[in-house]
Length: 289
Image 1: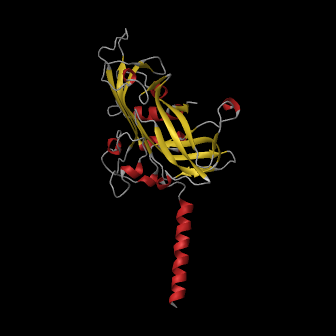
Image 2 (image 1 turned 90 degrees about the vertical axis):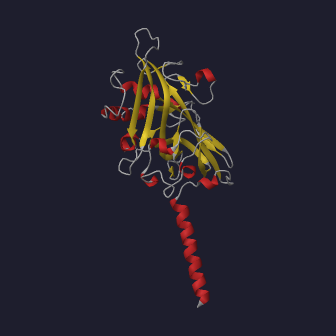
Image 3 (image 1 turned 180 degrees about the vertical axis):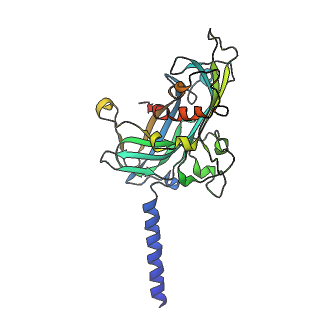
């Protein structure tokens, strides 16, 4: 009788282990241990305004982390001068597209992209040829409704390159009803006629997660190796290898929907601006290489 009980319990444990493996596409614990049939993927995310890369691996003069009115200024999509102080957003719902037509969902990966952080480890994935990536700006429903350790602590929830900024709490709106912002942007516009940078107009745009994480705003990067992207090599992931998806995050294109810079400079006073910005999300991202 005891022997049968042990066998039964062993079968239950085995079934539970298989179920766990089948329901999770990616585990952070596999980060440093790719196996013979897997490699690792990373996102390399550049903060950019049109043709100028900001933050990250740049010199001090191009860090763009000084204050309002200080250089450097960058040109947005309409040729207006702009500074960025806090550009950040969540990424979740990441999928890698395989050349065989299947899609790999990275269910346990959530990123919080800041100004200077660029490299974001995703997870260990099966070897193969991958042609594209898809993701959402914001948090998927499985993350939870509040920044508390009993949901997921930051060390588990967010994958960064070691830079302690930004933090989850900076995106929290203060209640489980409000939830999180999917994106937060602060900076300043130079609205002077002579482009002198005198008396710049500060802006503060917060886009709720409910507006960013929608089917219409899913970011679908083009298929590499075909059509207009014939010269973009596909990602061939070998055993124990590493592949980077290099992506430009272009705030200049995002902010082209803001027409009057002097009056439309805060989503707190003009909530409809958040809708306009959310509608521009799909045009904000493109391959760097």
